[in-house]
Image (tube, rainbow, N blue to C red; front, side, top):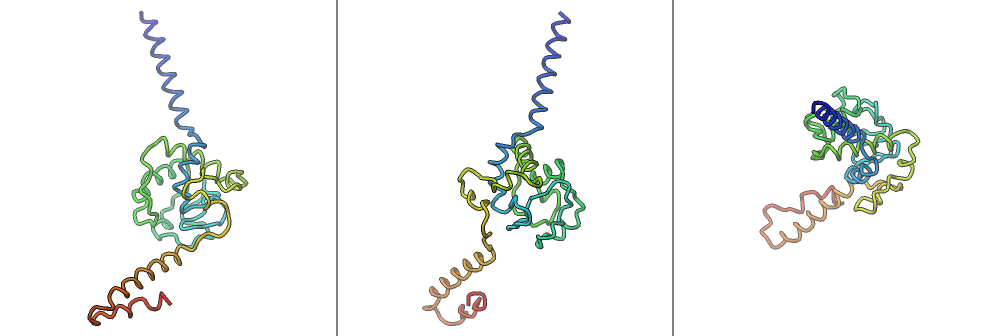
Length: 193
C-alpha cells in the first residue's frame, strides 16, 4: 500500500513539475496576440518610437536609456531598473507600482499566463535581427494591425491639437448668441491657427 502512495505522489509531483515548467516557458504565438495591446504605443523596429519607446533590444537594457526616445519620465530614468524576465513581468503587471510617477498609461496585465506568453513573444521579437520584428509583428487584423507594418508613425500631438481645435471651434459657434462677457474666441486662437 505504501508503494502505491509513493507512486501516486511521484506521479503527482512529476505532473506539477511538468505543468509549472510549461507554464513558465510561455507561448510566443499567444503572446503575439497579446502584444496587439502594446502595439498601439510600442514598435518592435529599432529606433521607431511611437507614443512609447521602441522595444527592440529591450532585454538587459537599462530603463529610460534608449537614446532615440526623448520623453522618458524622470522617475523611470532614475529607477536603475535593467529589463529582464523578472522586471518586465513586474512592469507589465503594474508599472505604477514598480516605478511610481512613470508616464505609461497602462492598467497592466493581471493574468500570469498572459504575461508569460507576452514575455515569450517579446523575448523573441526584440532580439536584434528578429524575423518577427522585420515583418512588423502582424497582429491578425485587429484595430492596430496596420500600425506595425512600417511607414510613418502618426504624430499624436498634431492629432490631439486638431481634436482640441474642433472642440474649441464648436464651443465658439455655440456661444456666439450668448452675451459677449467670456469671449471664447480669445481662447486657443494660437493653437488653432
